[in-house]
Image 1 (cartoon, rainbow, N blue to C red):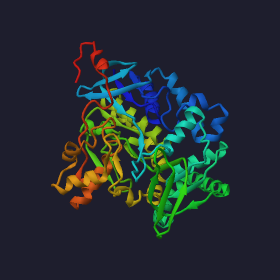
Image 2 (cartoon, rainbow, N blue to C red):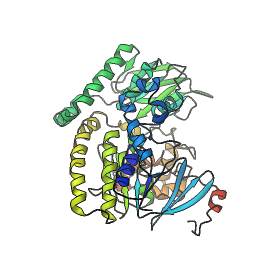
Image 3 (cartoon, one colour):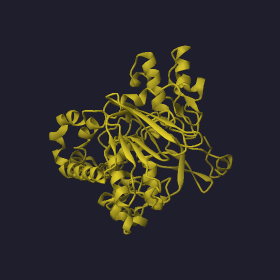
Image 4 (cartoon, rainbow, N blue to C red):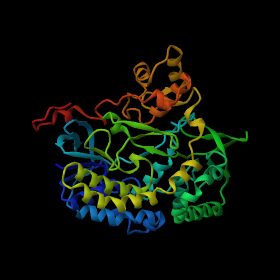
Length: 462
């Protein structure tokens, strides 16, 4: 196999189409049942329905790419989980309760982004969901909340979902806007650079107009949240930067505090990473073709740094060219001819990112939750439990993992890793970059003994 692509979102599909045009043998594996990723989830089933117009033209734009991907000749294995990658490159995966191992000359990780973990007291109560989860329900099942939700959070996805929900006939009880005060003052330094994306700026203004016109209450500058309930969510209290306090009775709360690159696999592969101050997250170090510090391992899409669907498509195409160059299937001159217009497109597509990062930084309170806040949902560990380990010494994230089991559950730290690292950094008087992140152990996803035993192809399981 020349190129194995993990993920069939915008980056993965674009990479597959380009790689096939360059004559590469391509296999795409994806956890989802159909191509599209999060942004274009179920696009083939929805794009020509009434739901597509409600989700917006950005959603419908995924259909031509999905069709081109289907017609590209790339092998496609949906509903497949990759649970280990070993040098060689040997990729171990499971489908329909059976495991297999495939060897590829190059691997492209197109795993996208994940919603930033945003722990607060009561966030594990039934009735608290993320905005991303609610949007998945809308795309997959046309699910519109019967109970008008309160929405707490900030960033473009919050605005988009509220507009989509209103256009679909849904109701919103209110919005607790957690954007730190002074968004436009922070963004003004980046305004000139964002003019290349003026259409996106205009679209955002239209969204805000629709949201204000809906007439539900909006509370700005929210800094702290606390959910209460016995068996399910019943009340939410909040505090703002100005000191205002309030509480609302509710049954459904949707939260969102931005997205961060999904770097679980690059961590497991010991690829080099850098700390992004603007996104307060780790990003893999990549060369101009999207290749990581591990030769033959490429990263594209939002996993390489948040940029949105159009940028993900361009990054995927560019990485496919890079993979062909790395394998000697293209010479440098031919690769550069293909890459030059792609890099120009990518610069335009990323023009608005500095403005958005400046306007919607994560609020400081996300990284210092109260002691009674559950931070590790898998092991039901609180922020107080993590801080107690610091009182007995100066553990790093790996030692804290051994002492508390934070990061040992099914999600392997996807939901608690950053929070634990921030708590340790604050206790040690260091930056998160200095503290680091805990090591990721195989398997990368949950695996049954039956799946492991089904490896009957002459390969040894890890």
